[in-house]
Length: 434
Image (cartoon, rainbow, N blue to C red; front, side, top):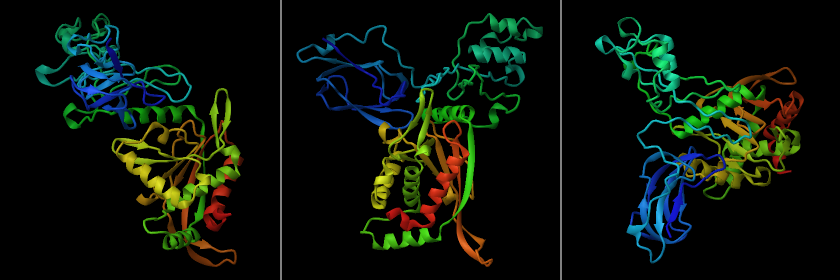
């Protein structure tokens, strides 16, 4: 009996992926545990192992195909002793993957239990110039964009003056055009579809280069838009003296075994985790069922990669030493840039850190990474004039951090207390050892 190999769900939020590579071909014999393919999700590239043994009878989805739905049949195995050439293809009702070159609408998977509205294919037709110009009213163009109608098919056939395409021409036309990659329309919280398109009346078609969105950029754009619109943010900022921390880091690295080098960011991860333990009301997430107070400090650290951003997680950071945090962070950041992280390595954080100090950014405020309740933005440490208790002015290395809080979970007083605890650990780094 034929064995169907289906597109696996490699994370709780995955609805589709790209079949990046096949490691087998028709006629190959596979055993359970053999790596047969590589799948690209919006966050990582992961290997797919065979769960049955047999002979590859058919490969139904070519390598490089995008938009393959979870549970779609991608290949068929023939069992031992079965004629591979006689094995039938996948059932007719199996979900069909979209061709690699075919544009498609973005699905809207949501890691949070909140209602989502799928994107609608939208395209703003190019008007062109001279004899190639498509004559259409603005309303007709908008309706065509929302319905996916190709105005080229109606060119010169409109019922308006000189063949101009008007509203009734488009309303009676059949959809025949998908949106180009990246032209999807995200859903607003009230369920309305908001097209995000470039109008050639504003930008001439030959005046820019359109780079299609990959899965990661689509997901980041959707989730950050939802976060900014649906979560009541408020920022708190504080200046922190870094001199003692920098001195402590130097001493730690001088005493550390060969190959161990602790960064300022590693120390900030540790200080954040300890502050969350001191202020457990801030180590929380909002849900419609109630507020979840987390037992451990799982610190998400923003890492910029090609095509987007990912937040690998240092779990139970309050229990780990600086050398362990440093080694784990280096490994996670390296594999993040290679898109080799597993879902459990970038999901499940309870607090985020975004550090742009290395770019000389003095201060900034980040958008919350749901379902976490807070995110801290770290600016550059710089020499500033500081007035001491005795009125004297001296130079000190000062860093500005901004804490963005979800007001549904954390009030101003709670956020301020957390910042006080964090500042205490940074300005007296020896307290992290107690």
